[in-house]
Amino acid sequence: MLRNPKSKIQNPKSLGLLSPAIVALLVWMIVPLAMTLWFSFQRYNLLNPQMTGFAGFDNYKALLTDSTLWKAMLNTLILVGSVLTVTVVLGTLLAVLFDQEFFGRTVARLLIIAPFFVMPTVSALIWKNMLLHPVNGLVAFLMRLAGFEAIDWFGTWPMTAIVIIVSWQWLPFALLILLTAIQSLDQEQREAARMDGARSVHMFFFIILPHLRRAITVVIMIETIFFLSVFAEIFVTTSGGPGLATTNLAFLIYIRALLEYDVGSASAGGVIAIVLANIVAVFLTRTVARTLEV
Image (cartoon, rainbow, N blue to C red):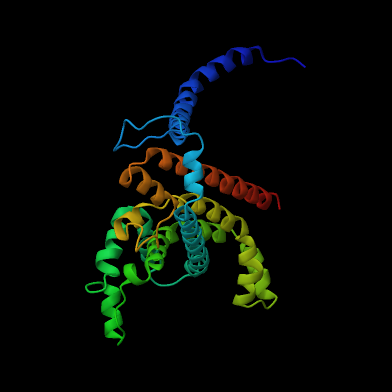
């Protein structure tokens, strides 16, 4: 079989065109990772620059034996699991709703998608000062109007407040993906089910939900990666408190690096976060791959 002689000429050119982007990507990824690994094995405190030297695995030992790390990891797990549950369940139900024809559907779609385009810092300020404020917030006003006592959400139920804020931001993303998946469902299959006497509940559980399995898996994968690094919402509203009630892994690294000035311990925490994120990413990628093969 004869080969195209031009291919030998085109390949070096292609590599030459791609090499700047590849080099930039590698530098962008490898340099911060290498610096993080280096500092994780060093004694380096910003308040005492003279106290430097090779620490070995001391930073990792101190961090892994600290109960604060495990509390932060538990909070991260609670936050990720809670927000995923809210966004996937409500996103599925809203996708089914918005797939139906009703008056004002276009305006309703625009309104429900809008939170996704609001910056995390801005949305956190809106919820903290305008919606969940125990004195001047809209939720407190409605609770008093209904005869209930207003709740200090960020003091009494801080993690619940963070879950509400993050879910409000990411619900439109889940809705868009799942609504697109529903609209790709074969209409003939729906009509055949209706002719066979299938009710709306049967349609949802036996036709729509199995069809959404792949889309739901993709939503879970993408959202999990982003939820592992939630920071702005916690920083603006609770600053990780009260105590460690809302301190996740990302905020713990911030505390060690910029509040306690312990760069070595913060870098060790960053390495642990990278390892955990990669484990989760590999697991989710394989899950998506298995789902797509079905």
